[in-house]
Image (tube, rainbow, N blue to C red; front, side, top):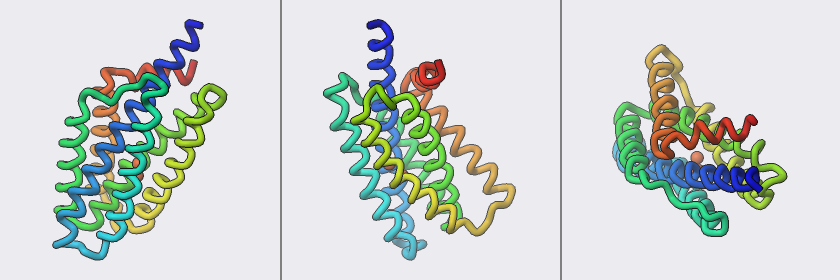
Length: 188
Ligand SMILES: [Fe+2]
Ligand SMILES: [Fe+2]
């Protein structure tokens, strides 16, 4: 009983982080669309398609919450601001930076989803199916970005490292350490 309660808590945390992550992703792509419309119109169709996916993902995670007694993150605004700033600055720095940003963010998301699936199998198969379908789309965002990166110099490595670290930190901060506990719960 105690362990099933612990699982419920972890499942709630998974939904909370994923929902907040999608909110952040929405802001990134919205900000990039705003800038790229003027500076790099050729990549706007990809950004618009991706934004449409992220909006659906957020809605799906939101829909899965009530049944599992999960609540949205209290620091959603932080994700919004962080995503917006990240989207805006990367788009202003050029197309390659947009692809580097997409790759870094989607890679972080992908790793978290993989970890979650390992934990959820056999515990919440409905959520497994949902996350599997979302993971497929996140992977297509990642692959598209990777295929379009044309410069992987020192600056690119630093920027990607910073984006990944910031994303991990905001995940940890917004869940008040839940993400660390979640990883531990998955391992043990
Ligand atoms: Fe997403
Ligand atoms: Fe995505």
